[in-house]
Image 1 (cartoon, rainbow, N blue to C red):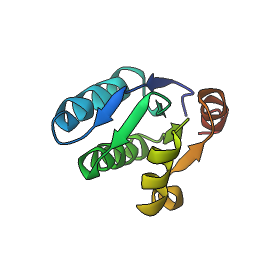
Image 2 (image 1 turned 135 degrees about the horizontal axis):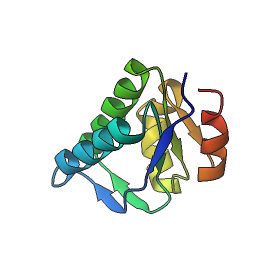
Image 3 (image 1 turned 45 degrees about the horizontal axis):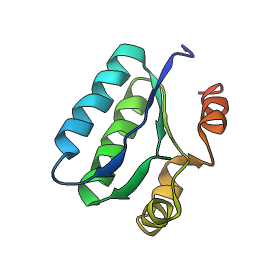
Image 4 (image 1 turned 120 degrees about the vertical axis):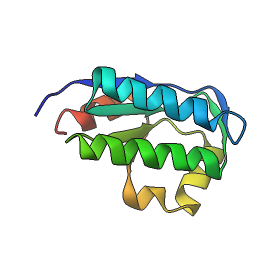
Length: 107
């Protein structure tokens, strides 16, 4: 299995107004650098249900390619949404980008 991966670092918000663009960017990154991806959430202020869907689609695409998606650096408000939505049970969520890159070393 390849150790190749990319880093996606959205800023501001992922919501209904930009979720389609975020999905396109994330899936394109997986195609270019896959099979795994780090989603660095440290600059993300808000994620809606549409944004959560984008993260889930990316995780499924990475898994289908033999990789995985790791979420990193979520601010407290985003981390709370991830926890309340159960994403902490279905995805790897770590404190920062470096920890995510280390988590992918075994992917």
